[in-house]
Length: 225
Image (cartoon, rainbow, N blue to C red; front, side, top):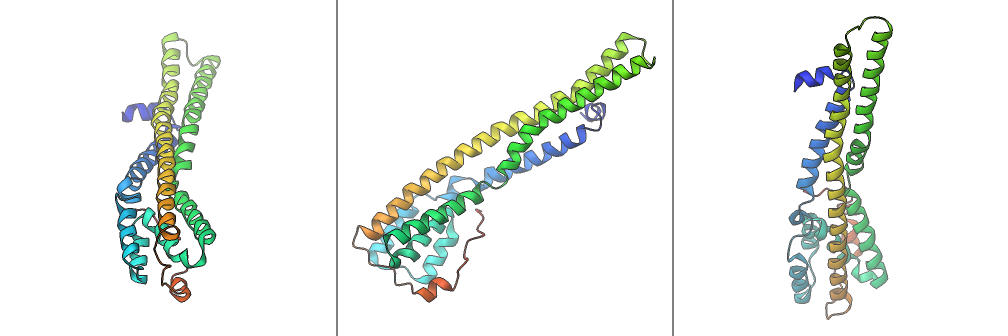
């Protein structure tokens, strides 16, 4: 393997770096985007029972916010309930958009790797072929077999670029689809909470304005764990 890397020339170095970055992003996103970390099963139902039994305390709401992505959005809705339906709906939608944006972290970089890796490989091949023919013109290569060997080495970068690009693009599309599914799940669970807060016997949260202002940016830099 190392012999192939050396034979491919200098442009193999950025391709190796791209492959390492690709593997790191895929592993990190696969862990972060596990559904259990995003929307634990039964969380909305559990919160619904608690709300029907009485308002949640400030501590319970903060714990919910730190629990998961879904918990963060639900806590935003509970905090916003005293301000009315439209305000609550807008706040939950805004928070959901912020959280989805966090989930998309590094995905654009992964897509960029998938796009530029074949181009880097092709560039390496073109440079290698140019060098081979320049050697022929200079009289340095007289054996066709040696020319063929030089061209075959130049093609190594094209193959390496494809090896990096194909899994990167597959992972990019997979994670994009997963985030769309997560967004739909957040929307469904958010609608369930709104129905509970405004179309059932649940009383408005007793959280005061001061309670909400104690943590004005709580979770704004939240990262799924």
